[in-house]
Length: 421
Ligand SMILES: [Zn+2]
Image (cartoon, rainbow, N blue to C red; front, side):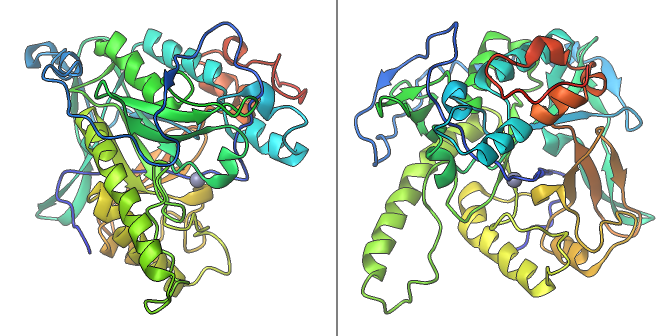
């Protein structure tokens, strides 16, 4: 299915090298108490509950009135873009002997802890950033020069600077669960998004809003409604090979249609699909959007990558993920790897194919929030910055406009790998 989005959606996401893993917990981060709510059942998703009559998110959606949006943020002014991987729920566990050293290195490189994440949100808020929808930043137009993308002028409150946040791999992969990350997003009895989590030490399973990036940002925005423009929050960059958002919604093509295991597999898959739908619905209601991170987290920059495999992967994403989250025109490159030889000035066959399937915004990872509107095809190339162990340790200066790494990094819990400042 293709969706040539007109103006609307852009998503982008990017993938960094995810040699990461998950997190392993051991003790709760010091200094704060997770909010626990007993969970009814571990494997089945909780019963979706109707959104309360008065949606607390209304206060965010309507915080800024149109007449307060008097600052034009034009096409020449960058829209900053930060992205995160899942955050480390139990850092003491993740960085303990319970997790192999190479996995710890991956966690240290590419992730931040819950406490670091909270501090980063507070800092970007304090610096005057305001969350904008990635879909609002660029649009596709048709004029005398043909059909092409344009950078929109954003209307902001005075003194605010636009910020996109994206979250990669919000799939709750098995390998992460083994290291103590939260395990899925659910709609709680209060109608809000919660994360299911199993404490890796006690094996207790509970719902929390304190150990997962999504409900933490939800609550931060509820407490600081001026942090969101028109209710925008952030965009997920999703793969599909282990389902989405903690639900195993993926198909298993190894189980043939006539395999006796098929009916049971189908029934389970359908129950996961049914369970994730209200979660997607509530996320959409509260400012979250969705982009592709490819189905299989495939490295588009690999020399061995074939166009055929990109087609298979893309069709599979659209079939198994796109049908659940809806159309998107944003693609976040896994590993940040661009196709066709990494020359973003050129338009190779893989790029052309992906664009023909509806993608317009192609996000990689870089040293600034660079973006470039291509002139030979209707598409945007952009980069995202990556708050994580590598940049906290080694790129302090580059991130000072958002936060001072010295104030953020928790060296008491991370491995002793040094810092460059
Ligand atoms: Zn990724």
